[in-house]
Length: 99
Image (cartoon, rainbow, N blue to C red):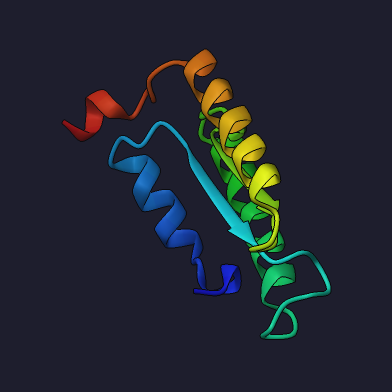
C-alpha cells in the first residue's frame, strides 16, 4: 500500500483504540510510484500531529519516515528508535478509555 493511501481516520482510529503509537512508512520523497502519494502522506501526518497536540495527546506518538525496500538497516533503526520513544512515553492515555 502506498503511504499516500493511509488516511487520517486510520491513524486516529488506531490511537483512539489504544495503540501506543503509529508509524507511517513510505518511499523516499520524490520516489513514489504513485507520483505524489508520499507528499500527501507527509501532509496528512503533519495535520494529524497538530490535531493530537490540540487534543492533549503527545504528537510524538505519530511518526512518518521514508525508507526504501532496499534499506533494511535503516528500517531496523527507524523502528527501534520509534519503539524506544513510545516506551519512554508510556502507555497511551487513550488505552484506558478504549477498554
